Image (cartoon, rainbow, N blue to C red):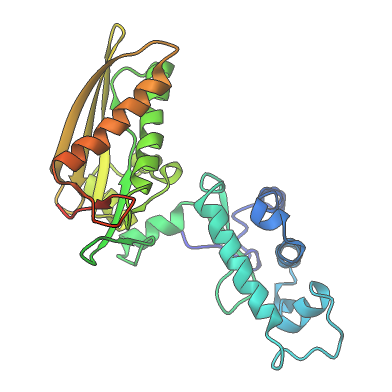
Length: 289
């Protein structure tokens, strides 16, 4: 599904839903601290909903949002374009973070001041299917582009305790991998949704343009938890590293056990040459397996 603008006549979202989404966006710190960005977004959305998107020009925004005089000349003053760039960046930050699970994505296309509204995940899925460039990638020590993602651990026991423990492992592993220099880690808030869309790790790798995928399995027998962690080369589905851990888990030590397991994961990867530590660097770097 392509992004849909309200002035196309195909109202995929109601004005009420869009206004609620605007309120959520405006509550984000990137917007709460900037009156200009708040007014800019509110104005262009309101005008679009009202059917006046054809009036969203640089001159109009300068007068209505930035309180410029009627003598304002867009060709001589780029202030509107500057704030439009800020707005696009703030929207991107919001949807890469707290807004990643929102139903509606608000997009301000480059070179245009008319917002479009789309299903939050669909534009990214379309980019994968058409082999368009995906999300930002990192660079490893050898200069190769490298991105990784952690997807939810599989667990046969679907009790709430196991689900919470499994989810906590994914969050903790993502945080630990972020400390590896030059490794770009996809937000777990986003990557945890992908198994619902793709069953093949190759497709998930293509979706994120990721070279490596981390996942695993959680099993429980009485009060013993067995956790298997895997590192998979996304383009070939080759398992290039794996480790199994067993711990006694109670209602009061689950956080501690998660921390211990993730610490052991990083230590084991280092010992097996999956992580390298260079001189004069305080953080590890990821090796290309």
